[in-house]
Length: 261
Image 1 (cartoon, rainbow, N blue to C red):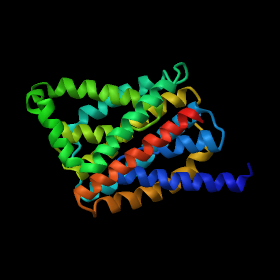
Image 2 (spheres, one colour; image 1 turned 90 degrees about the vertical axis):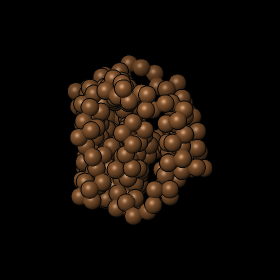
Image 3 (cartoon, rainbow, N blue to C red; image 1 turned 120 degrees about the horizontal axis):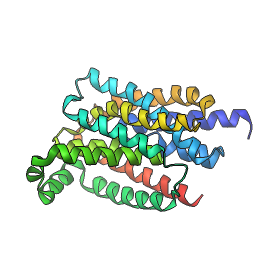
Image 4 (cartoon, one colour; image 1 turned 180 degrees about the vertical axis):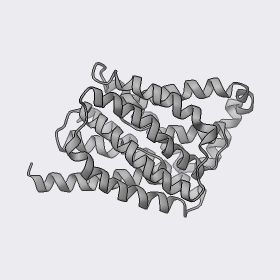
């Protein structure tokens, strides 16, 4: 593949992965990992590490955009950041040794199902349904324990697969802290700095980062993240919820594709 075509792929992948991250607290991994492995031939381990590093960098930029609009609330969620970072670092240590096919298939199917539900009814309807069925008010007695377990598991999955935990963290903030959707997204983006950053450190120690492309992808991912974060704060929660649902479906389909390519 010639250098010009590779540059075009990196620019497009960077922009749209940043757009996805900024708009729906997603992850650059859904687009970036697939592009690096399927289109450019890099190893899955290098692609995961690189995606986590870019998630960390772009999450900070997009998170600041939300912070400037007072659409973040970090203090109640600090436990998620700390234990999510621990889980992410631990997860990054298992990537090289563990087969990913079963995990990828499972996550892709779950994401597609979740995305369809959110797309059909929006976020708030489903959050209220889950709260009712799970008896969230009862579980609040054990909020700290739940937060620790939730954070470690989400962080581990983040560091292991490279599929950033922003969307999962946002869902936890919606369920247990009853954040508004936009605030949940903004806060989860700031938390990515710690969670994806810790996972990236784990991959750095294993030399699983593609440093030459980090700058190029990072620049265009930043542009996409800024556009996505600005746009998402201007549309109502119902529309944003359905948009997030559509993005989740796309992420699941891309993961499914990655399993068979």
